[in-house]
Image (cartoon, rainbow, N blue to C red; front, side):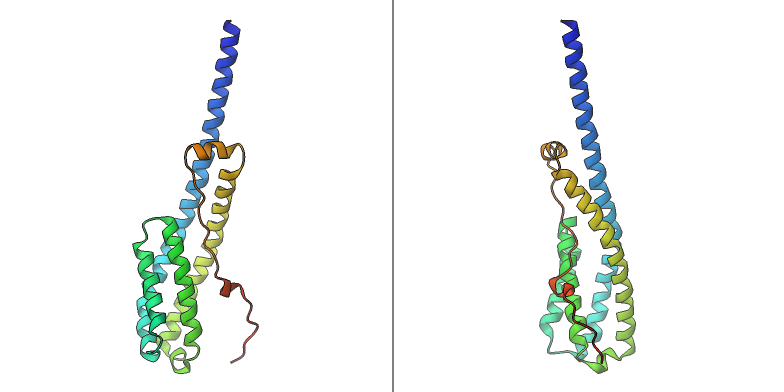
Amino acid sequence: MTITLIIVAVLLLLAVGWGISIYNRLINARNQVINQFANIDVVLKQRADQIPQLVTITEKAMEHEKSLFISLSDARQSYFSAQNMADKITASNEMNRALGNLIAIAENYPTLISGEQFTQLQLALSDVENKIAQRRESFNDATTEYNTTIQMFPDNLIANAFRFTQLPLLDISEDDKKYHGIQFK
């Protein structure tokens, strides 16, 4: 009888240890995602802070493009009012699209894009975008690893029990994925 109790106790301890090990691995994966996003968040805020200056410079030259400025302003406001990582990711993706549209439309205004302020701001935005791209890759890698971990058996048993949920990736818009060829101006 005591041998049976010892075997049951050992099996129970092994099962609890296994569960704790999986739980700790899930926490580690989630914390890696949070850390990677915090690295991106710093640069996203820097980009959001540059938007008012960009709007001021371009608004004068492109007065009939009001809807573009509204969408850019809305995306910026969404980013600053986002309460969690998922909302910030959504707002960041909106900001990407709005900034892309602004730069594309600005190309139709040669006096605007040849201006020194616009050129300096475009260089600053380009630098920030490069930083975001580098950090986005690390974030998406960490997020993919986390999402895969919570979906795989037997980790998914613990993940479901403790309500670990999938996290979104920072995506690239469909327009950004299209290749427009080399364009000479």
